[in-house]
Image 1 (cartoon, rainbow, N blue to C red):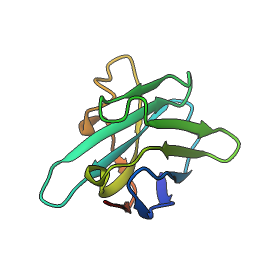
Image 2: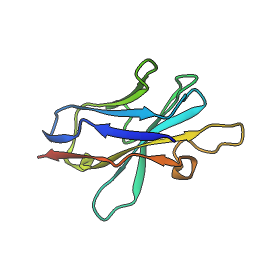
Image 3: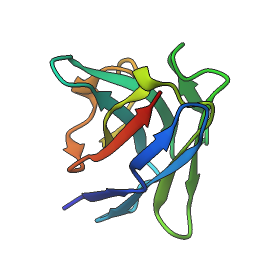
Length: 127
């Protein structure tokens, strides 16, 4: 059974940085994609970035391009989201997600592609 535990959230001033971690267990994960989604109060859960565990290929939504970096540590079975130049509109609960990739898989940004979710970690950016 796959289990995902996020950490690293907190309160930061606008322009600051945070690094989120997602510790995964229940692998191996070489056939998985891992992703970060976020959900602000009253909003839908939106994709931020994704990574193909096998190839290391990374995928970013426009909100993340140039400011966020997703990466993985194979030895630790951990995925990271490094966030720079944070803005108040980045305030949300950030969720880690994992899903098996096959030749039939759809978009890395579709929540339907992920059947394993963490509990979320709160990121608050003050102005």
